[in-house]
Image (cartoon, rainbow, N blue to C red; front, side):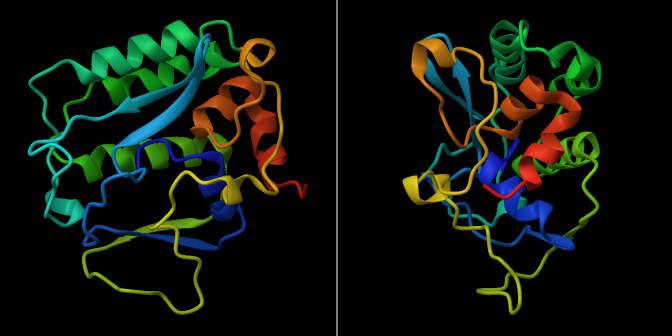
Length: 195
């Protein structure tokens, strides 16, 4: 998933290792090709366009991005427009922008790049690995593959300074980018604290 939500990172912050399953099948209505941020009029969904649309019948490693449009330019402009006034956006802007300038053929490659970038910024120690072999379930592991936006995920999530909160109220479980741009280096501490 690109720039996973706060709930995903909260689970990862407690893990010693994370395995990204490249063989799982694409699931529509999931986080596999979208992420959510806040804007002046509420939640904004940033979706990565896919070849064959959302009617995928492929494992994640075979899902290709439709690069005929300028989705990366649009996503970057939206992030700049929304977060330019966030306290820490300028701190991360120059290292994040190259992700939106590099060409990606496969969705899994962009997702992995976004996860690695966030892991670096958060300074989380969990070992990040990928697998090419599908596992229906993992023993002794928290399986985050079936995560969807649901109210149950919001229990125990941190509340932090959020742009546009005075207009929209606090919107929980947005992309980790929202927490990072708002709180900067304190994002890790906020993420791992018990609520």
